[in-house]
Length: 246
Picture 1 (cartoon, rainbow, N blue to C red):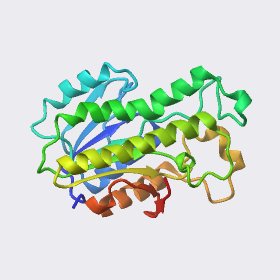
Picture 2: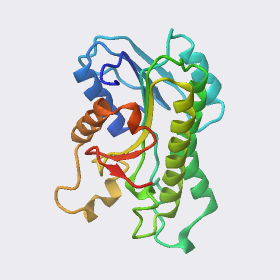
Picture 3: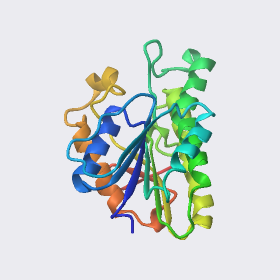
């Protein structure tokens, strides 16, 4: 159903895993129309023979909705795949909280802006562009620690809360777009711990073999996407294609 995309929109495209996903998509579909969104510029993927369009935009900003709508209006149809890689775990001054006492309002709000609103704003920008008969695959990169059912350790308050909120957005979108579109699949996927700037401060705590290269994670993610069908909509997937509890 979704294994032959003609146009892919990749958001948060300047991140390490997003760049690898873009490269993997181009490797499998050299003539694809690749549309990228990010706060900065994104280099063209080597070997890409198809159309390439980029919009520099901060999806955390509500004004991005109109900017992306205008940008997408330049295309005759919406993308077949939308992959949103926007996410935040830490910055120079903040890391995952180990206890309630460490929680700060400003950091929780910032986590919600990046981990939730960047996905909601993109969905809002895309919403009026959707065509009932055109298949749509929407993928939000989420995290296993955002699963309420899987949480046995606690901690990481802001990241868990914001990713759990993202998961609920994905579930809601799957229901609304499932009613409007003849063939849609809206999912979240956990890529596993990947060797990027997001995971760098925490890599020393990993068991051997549990840190994956961006290229490996990207290949696994695209493998899962190629196998999805409308019946899979509304689920959180592990990188191997198995389902995780919400």
